[in-house]
Amino acid sequence: MEPDVDLDDLKALWAANDSAFAATLRLERAEALSAKAERRIWFELAVDAIAILVIGSFAADTIGQPRFAIPAILLGLYAIGFEMARGRQLVALKTLDYGEPVLEIARSLRATRARRAVAVRWIALIAPLLWVPLQIVALRALFGIDAYAAFGVPYLVANALFGLACIPAGLWLARRFGPRLGATSWARAFADDLTGRAFSDAIAALQRADAYAREA
Amino acid sequence: MDRPTAEAAFLDRLARHRGIPRKVAAAYCGHPADREDCAAEIVAQLWRSYPRYDSTKAFSTWAWRIAVNVAISFYRRGRTDAERTVAVAGDAFDRVASPETATPEPLERLYELVARLDEFDRALVVLYLDDRPYTEIADVLGITPSNVATKLNRIRNRMKEWSRTWTSTI
Image 1: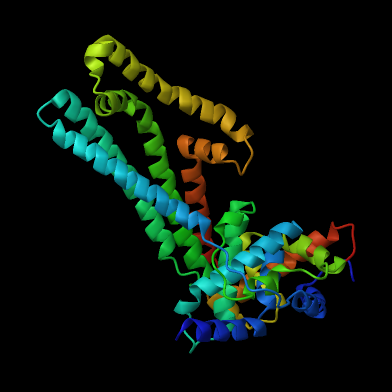
Image 2: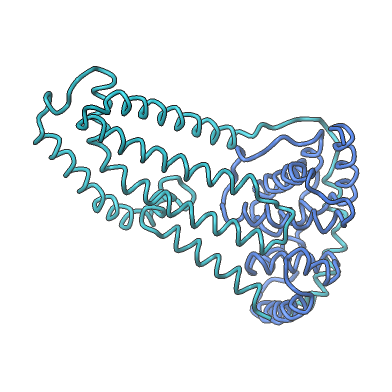
């Protein structure tokens, strides 16, 4: 072939090798593969829903005792937010029609990815603050222990402050070491979500798809 | 349409366009194992989306769209994820997932060039190489036919530039 490669030369090469693609197709055995990823999401949704019910029930039982009810309500709101974010993601993916034009699907997927990145970031940033409410509710619900009396308020305040300090520390660690993690590892994905890098990447990709459709 | 009839219709149509999953997978995945997984995922998605297929429209256009959409997602995910497979009709999976011959070397060289393009230009080039008309390429990508022509000219020029610095021959 000439040093200057032309698309039409490649077209001829492509056509000449068309049978290679076809030759690899063969009938063999019938097999159904299960949708493990989807089942896992449904399982997690169910677990979240049960958690919301249990926390809601605890809050209702202790509604006359604000020191237990308020932590339970905070946990419940967090769990509801978590469930909504997960549910929204699932609905977005389930309703996606891959038979639509490529740029349209690219935009939908990237917008979904950006929303997911925002949701994960907030969920992760708020989580350390809920360590104290979780202790109060879990100890009371599971063992009947009053954390305020058992550990004292200073201990709980110290725990809350520790949770607060975990946020900037976690962000620093994610920024510092996130890029060194394997590009496809879950830890890298989490670090990218936490630092906002995943959101920025999704928005940049969305803009690229828009630009591709516009440019002529 | 009941399931056996739908399966039969799907397999019949897929048989007539059975090269699409592997061609698209090869354009987006460098590693042979990834290509196989990607092609399998394309077939899985074709079957999953088949109830939405409008039979008054060309199956090939619909199949190309799904193949490219799945391949771009696969490519962006950057890895094989065997868990993201779904139930596939009959033996459709094996039809495309079982390689019997290696991809010829000149074609690999061609893919080296294609791999330099971004994800949308890759789709455009693969469709062009497959001799799809501009209107169909535009329909698959969601752009206008004139836009297709413009982009192809740019790609053509870029490929010529690359080939000048390319030491290997195709």
